[in-house]
Length: 260
Image (tube, rainbow, N blue to C red):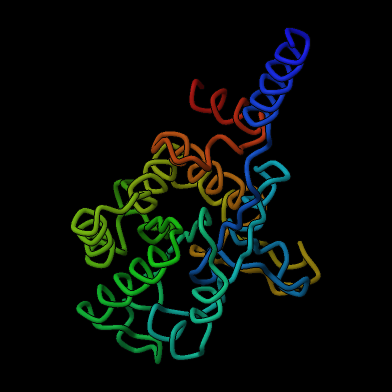
């Protein structure tokens, strides 16, 4: 009898240890947004969306599904039926990173989204994400490279970034203030060195742009990685469960970069 009880107790302890050591469930991190985040075609290289390097920061329990598309706003993302498949596929524990604004804020574009509508679309993304027990994360639109005559970086998304901040506060949603943080990086690098982050090329430098390129909105490989590292650092700072799934070498690199 004593041997039976001992075996039973041992089996119970083993089961408990197995439960505690079981790997976390696999999740998907959806990225919805515009060209600054999206996956680029080879013909556009070295232009790189920050969502491309971002996908490699996580362990095997995370799939990053980048649905961002060039030129899209909150309005056009819904109108083109790009959001609805994401909402339908969401499962408990997933994340949706939401970064729009570049195309919403320009009145001359077909994708223009008035301020009130922009906020309503953000709330829709939040509400439908939470309905699936997934986690929405709002990002203010990443900064464009723009400096005044004195070399001070200028904001180009002030109104729409503030809408994101207020919506995050009202809806109690995790916020990554990408606009402010990327502006700070550009200011730190300065007028000339900040060009190294963007898709800026001299004539003949790259076969995809034989006449050269001067782009202060879209990133090259280096810029995309630097922007992805900002998002990664904020995931850790916000103490999202997702932070536990960052590969150790990426976490170490980010901490080292912040220390410098």
